[in-house]
Length: 541
Image 1: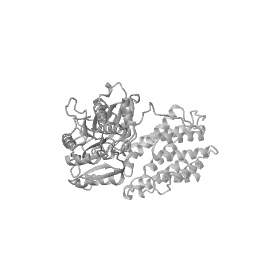
Image 2: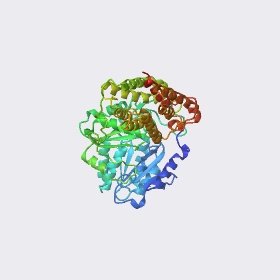
Image 3: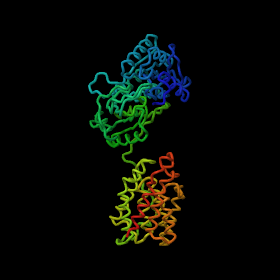
Image 4: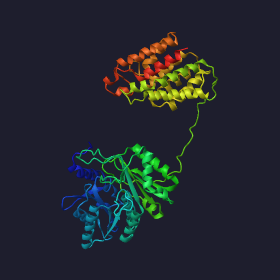
């Protein structure tokens, strides 16, 4: 359920929040509806006023684009419904000065009629009014009445830049019409929007070319990835046929995560090519459709005048300044200071290598069991994580770049592998363990002392103690056995016992500590089980 109070109060509550937190004012019309206008102190009557509007549900459009260099007023209707003629007319009267005003109208029947009639009445009253129609949707090629969608925001910006430079009404209107005629947009969504108070429509799936008022798409499609989604959008926009540089705007329709927006940006730049993008706008929520999980892409030719208009500063709070795209991501090599593992002896035949190989193969075989254990308290990837670490160590063994003729250098190399290629907190904890062991082995060949130092470092940085149901519960008893003079086999058996004991207590550290006790009691900690299995495998002759 979306975080709305009711369908009836949604629009007034949104407008109230915007006017209380931004430099905006509510103008109450004679019929009781609201027009949003810029602060009177910032209005310059000698300049052309740019007015836009339409149904609500597209925030920040249109009120978020009020400010010096863009709109003077936004006329909001109810959710996905055109505002009344009276609201538009009274907005014109309020913000228009001697220079006149330009109405930017999205190509929907209600908006065309209501804004059009308001313009005629305003002219009859003596106001100077021009209109520009935005019809940037290319979902239906050849359709005589394309809809006006996210590209409308770019028209606002071009018109606002022209007005702020002091151009006449006819010049501002011409600039806006040229911009409107040069843009094209298409959207893609994984499903329809849920209107306030309505049940979700489970029949509709992924659609290409749907409208911003929840209209069905031009066609239902299937996609396998972000790359696939972007490819279908790029194809529909016929970007491959372009030879000139372009302005690209990536618009979030309201329900995409930040991460999705960044991945979609990556794909657009990759598939179009950075050399062809003069300016990139986004990812930005400019023209949304309530909480629709989808996006639209707008393309505009990078003509000098259009780019200059987009680059002109504006006080509108929702405008995101266009950015240039680098040809390739800048990279700098890090300074290498620790060279201890670069000169190590990796000669084969060392018996430690074969024991490590046995341990890696055991962890690889345990992948499914460890993942199953992890599902009760985590995200079910413990086995996958340990397998990744084991495979990485095994790969270096097979490549001849990991050996233990020098145990300290060998453990330091293992630490580097686990840190960079295992992943997860387990990888970092084991890297801490093996790094500390390497420090001891560089001074002394006593493996019990090394394990003790590694265990202490792991507990210090990880925050876990014995009894918290973590890897420590397997490592601690193994260390005590070795420290008392016991064999590696005896240490492994004690580690297995410690791992089994974790099933009897609630987790007190790690991700499992954040779930109810009942979820962690009854199953061994996967990290402890993995460590115990590793020790058992390397103890075999």
